[in-house]
Each structure stands twice: as structure tokens, then as C-alpha cells.
Length: 286
Image (tube, rainbow, N blue to C red; front, side):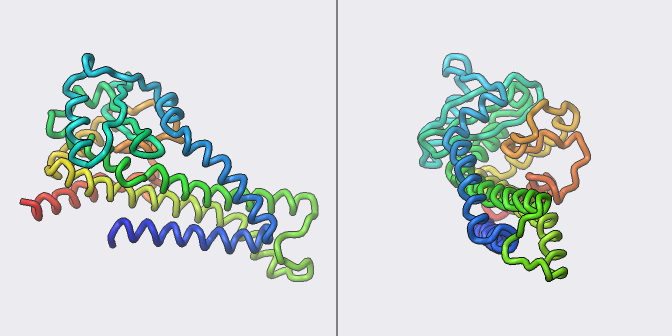
């Protein structure tokens, strides 16, 4: 399935889940309160996403004099992608990885680790940076923020429902005499936030596939990005990266892969599948 269409379907499903949960657990009033709270929190996060991400990763800006090749590659790829050149940062870490952030192309930044620059050759580095520029081009920060607003609102409604039950309040449209309805509400309180989390992660995985495909087109060499991904996965197992789990989804490969995380709970698709898709693209392009 086309990744753009898949993202749209997942967002629609998340929105539908929010409407059902809100109506069932919080009623119309509770649904709107939860949505406004979640939207306000995530709007601030979205607006200052670049500052938060760069500060949490301890990235530092790097000048053209310090890293001429890195700047040259970013400038060339940005021109090919039709984007303004993003700000360039380096993270002091021997684990090879990279991420992009920013609310729009005019306020974007790319950050790479020292380990990435040491491990990859120029073509592989181009593939990785093209992937990151694709996140900027595809407005993935905005899409992930929308998903976070809806998923966050579902969690708020479930939390409100729990407090209401704790203090003997009424929930949504449920009746005190309807035991079946009460059980349904209780199940919804437990299942809904979990389902929202799964959909949010599925959206993240879909955007990674799309960034791979778009990045491969920008740099015109899918096989180099595929080779880079295999190297990055291997080295992220060898040298786990010390990152805040909340920022793990930003990186091109999951920096937390050293721990045993089930694939269904991962914000990244399996590297094997990403590599297979890229090599299929390479065959078609050549």
C-alpha cells in the first residue's frame, strides 16, 4: 500500500477511535477538554521541536569550516530536494546515527553523530542525509504532532474516566443500571490508549518507509542508503546510544535496539524490510 495513503488511513482510524472513546468515556464535554489540552501541549512541542530535540540530544552547531564535506553534501541534497539548506549539527557520540527536526523546511536542522561520519563513506552518508531531508520535505514533524495530539487526547480521556470512577462520578453516556455498559467503559479505558499507541507507532513506521523511498530518489542511489542502514543497525547493537526514549523515534535507526523490544511496539520498521524495499527500488531505477 502507498505509504501516504497508509498514513492517511491510520490517522483517520486514530481520529475515529478518539471520537468513539471520547463519546463513550468523557461525553461531548470531556472529549473537547481532552482534545484542547492535548493540542495545547503538542502545539508547544511542535513549535519548538527543533530546540527540544537538539538540546535533548546534546547536539552542537557545526560550521562549514569545521565540517566542509558535511555541509557540502547537505547543501547539494537540499538543492536537489527543493529545500532551503537546514542547519547542521553534530552529536558527540561514537554510535552512528542521525535525525532531522524542525516544524517546517525554513526552521529545520539535521544532526549526525561523530560515529556516523567516521563509519560511512561519502555515498552512504549522502543516502542517510537524503533520508533525513525527506522527513523535512514530507512534513513528518507535523504529521507526528497531529498523531500525538489525537493519541494524547485519548489518554487524557481515559485518565479522566479513571478519576471519575474513583470518585463515583458518571461516565459519558453510560447508565448506572447498565452493567454491560459499565464493563464496556472499563474495557475501553484499558484498551483505547493501548490501541492509540499502536496506531501512532504504525504511522511512524509508515513515515520511515516513505522517507527511505523519497531519500533514495533525492540521492539517486537506494543501494547506498541500504548499505548504510545495515551498518547502522550492526553498530547500534554493538554500541547502544544513550538517548532519551522519547526521542528515539527521530533517529534513522532505533538507538534502543540493544534492548528486546517487540516489533509491534517499535517506532521503526525492521531494517531487513527497509533494505529489501530499497534494493527493489535500485533494480527498478537501474
